[in-house]
Image 1 (cartoon, rainbow, N blue to C red):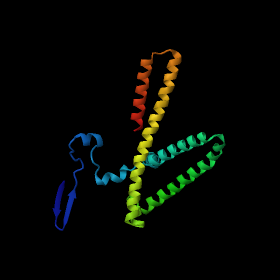
Image 2 (spheres, rainbow, N blue to C red):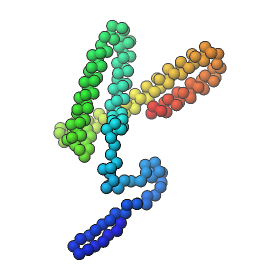
Image 3 (cartoon, one colour):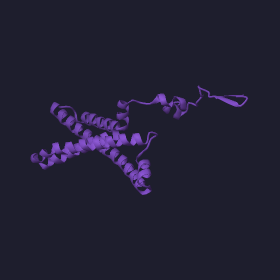
Image 4 (spheres, rainbow, N blue to C red):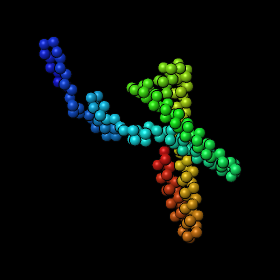
Length: 189
């Protein structure tokens, strides 16, 4: 950093090429951004939706899957309820999207559920919102893992049935099924 002092004025020129130690953190995350570069490092709406809406999208996808499972278990007559339930889910997603847009406009510097609830409702509702989000994240991970295991188990069973029909050795089939199960659960987590 270069500092020059003139009568009545101090000029500070930041070092634009900081030397950062390349430890594990620096290798994984990279060099810190200069504050002046931060506005040019924004992401677009398409990438932002993929990155920041994954929680809502995964919750919606798993909920829809479970609703269909229950309706199929209930019988063919219950499948009439699929369309109204789908409309309710779409309405809920529209409400959440509008709510997010309002929050972004009201808190342009960033505002999570805790900050918004604290500013508008008080400390206790803010703590409740924070606890609800923490619970939601934990349950989303649990549902993702269980869904991955269920899909992997189904794939393993299908592979085992196909190998039994083709006359493949059971040991080889178990190895393939085990590696498939391991790969798919590792990818889902």
